[in-house]
Image 1 (cartoon, helix red, strand yellow):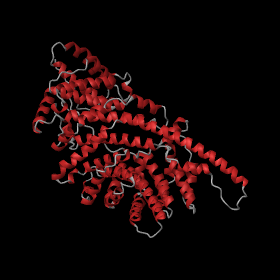
Image 2 (cartoon, helix red, strand yellow):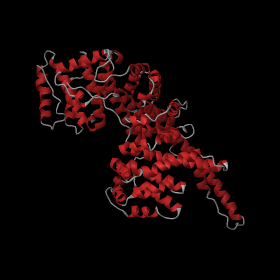
Image 3 (cartoon, one colour):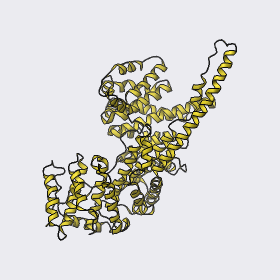
Image 4 (cartoon, helix red, strand yellow):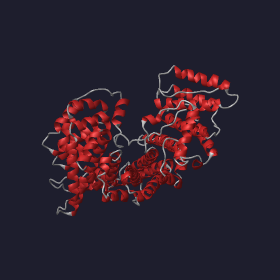
Length: 607
């Protein structure tokens, strides 16, 4: 039976704000695929207009246009990147910000090819120059009125935030961009931005996303970290602020510090790992479903109160306008529309939604970091060669177990510090809790709100990440640390209930891949310890039938391995020959008619 390889998560490909909602709207309206260079040509021409206001409006228009995927080829043909790039250094701060916003959306919605093309077209030169100017601007001590100084500083920070998102998206997709990041000394700049986390958490989060990306598998950059830089990271991770945005920030910084573990002195390793797991544990402690319910109700109450306030002020405005009409009109005096003024003073309408998304993103990120902790030492491909018989697999696992002091059930081994922290902070228990389906009330609430509907997918993603985490822990921790044989049987029943409570489970590919991975690891561990399995042959065959015909390669690999594991176990029991011949024989026959998945995977059924 084959070994299960722990899945390693990369950072999300795109900015969380680059959802490309306009593309979905275009598809819904039946306009997807319609090519129209008219708006693009007009907007790109206006980028050269002598008026800063016109250039700013053109950038804002492009920021919306690039979210429509059909518009991207036309923008590429018209060299939009080379036209937008110089505006990052425009004399107008407003133009700089909107130009960076347009490039941010382009890099988020365009994918790997667009990001790589942006690097080819030398977007990194003006982008790095802009970041350096922002850094210098935040350090400047210009003598000016405090109000003007604060306004200018806020503009610079907003520009830096947009630029950091562009940098993050590009570095996520292009190794050349990461190399330029290293050579241009961008680390010092972004750490300076991160140090502003007490007053600008949005900028700090953007920096943290970027840092987690560029520090992964980048030994050259690790050499550039100094003690002051590490201190900035530590201060951000240990911030006492407990708002959801800061929870996300601390989680992202924890992931960055984990990437830096190789440069942390050995005497501090245990303390740092303990601090990282404390952050991740606190994140997983929070109930996402209850948070969704509470925050959506808070938004509803706030908007109702705001509407009542606006009605009162509109009534007062009408009375004031009547009085104005009775007075002599003052020449050249501009009247202010009170309604617009009042609306500008109202709180942001998406405040609760933004906070909830921050929490869900933090929980997903925490689970991904834990998975990466479990696969920090990736074996070579040769070491992952699949084994063809149960005897060979058992021998392999016995050898691996002895080599790591009795704490290993897979080719990977958790360090003592991580193993201890996992146990101290009840990480396995908290991951187990996250494998449950999302709160049905929260799902219902989100499904009835267009702005909250996207959170359903985020909650489902958290469940899938938790299942992958479970796979890693079952593969790495010894049976006693997982609660003993009884706990593994309970876990098998839990996974079976999750799987077969959904009649259409085969249609949910991400869920099926995640739960089949967890089942594969669990059944493998139980088989190696001669722990009786709780899934019935009918359940196993239902899973295998659905999985074998899945279009997802990961699902097919998992169910083939599950079939091999179960077949090997049944072959050792009395009275199972007919089951092997009929049920498993038919499954093997079905597999033989499909294209090969992994050439080295074989199933041996001993009779």
